[in-house]
Image (cartoon, rainbow, N blue to C red; front, side, top):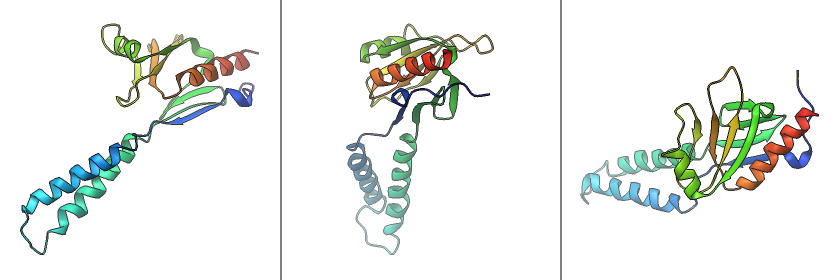
Length: 160
């Protein structure tokens, strides 16, 4: 059974991609390490480290940025995890210091955390689900205010 559809402005969709400047740095390091394998000697296999390390580095960067955060159809979805917004009791926008505090001394051992170090801000979504021991979700996002508004709007629409 599905709940009411949230208003169109309540939707949120973001991919937590790595910053553009990670690419030249990571690929440059991979090329440097590839060059180091044969130390400048010319052999028939000089191309092999490049053929292995450059695509592997690109695949790693793509994998790091594959996580998607969405609010749609009455659910908050973060990567493969999802929870109906009706279980959300509170949404807090955190700056870098707040994120560090929630990840450090204030961390709950059963919290669901999707944290990307290259994204300074995050949202803490407090959960009240009797069947789930997770107290909150901590999710990195570049647009925390929009994510918080989308969750709150979707929750309000689902409760009508």
